[in-house]
Image 1 (cartoon, rainbow, N blue to C red):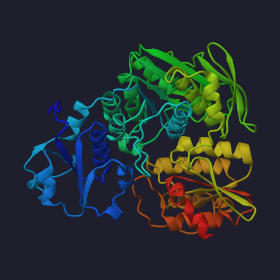
Image 2: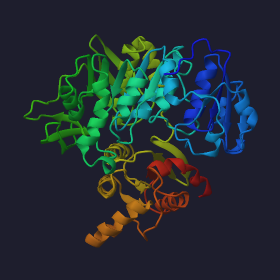
Image 3: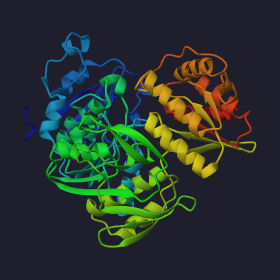
Image 4: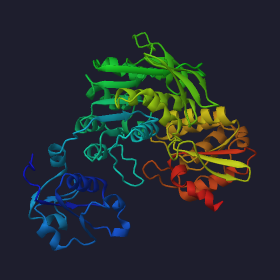
Length: 507
């Protein structure tokens, strides 16, 4: 490890400052009093994160990197992906200070709280940050525009930025070791798990493989404080498997189960879950995993008026929300616990913030009203998330038309599960993504009566990009088609729906 003691007068040259890591490293060094320069081959107008560098007094070179950059720098910080055979690397004649050196030299020096799970992470993280801000506590912010920033090195570097606390969303692309690396290197002291349901299975091959990637969160926080959804059998099974021996706090909700489905237990058995939301509810496995008596429980839930009672170990709280859905009762409950236990705030201050939280962009978000029809978008992109969200739309609004813009990370099986969930809850289904169109074509061939419910013309050949399942035009055409139905509500689901929601302006 290269040490940076007594080097405050030295200058660090950051190569690739328009990338996420380079941007964050430049800000970390500058906030600690070092001289910093940055360079990037991108012109300033194409530097995606340049706005977050404003006000940092960092000398920046865009386009070609001048010799001046190398002459002024005492240490060069290259991007981890920079090839040693590249032209710019061959120009480096100074000592390197690399990503691992940044992590090893600069520690978080603040309380760090992590939030993981398959669904609900962003809403939970955003609400907990709002509660912090409302009470004069400043969380670290990566400020990378239009970047979720919950994986790779972003949470690790974000934890080292200026702030009173770090509240980090911890995601994964399903790759073993990624969650462990984030928890360890972010020096996390406590965390919350919302749920664990199938996702990224195309990368890993099985639900339990994916669950154990999430289980790294439990393993690495062993002996510390952990807040979990006790009505998720996967979480409770992993706690036993990893022999968790820390401060465990469980939560759940009191609600009549609406269906019975199976979920794989960590012991390998398929167990029945009387589901409240997808994958969570009341369960029992012969291996001993069963729904616990949770520490915090939400009761008397009134979805129409967005309120519920929360029974804590000490008192009963009257909780008023400004967001919809049974899934958000889970999310809000977990956040109230985190704000009380981790931020050490009194309940009355927490509840004031909860009551004014109107949600996260792209989550059950109303984006337009065309004629007498409301158009909503939701980021839901895996089977469990889609099932939960569409179930809530049906409960709250009645009939609706669902536009599917998803291409599942779990491949065809995920696409089929998502489509079947849409068929269950929506009056009409419009497949906008190529993946959903392929499913629609096969389902209609098997059962021609579905032509009355599925508005389907053809199969596009759009190539999936990352988790993006549809193009701008496909989303627009899907919503336009949905507006021709007799439903007063159109719900477009998936990343493409939220990314291209501005297409409604063209309608």
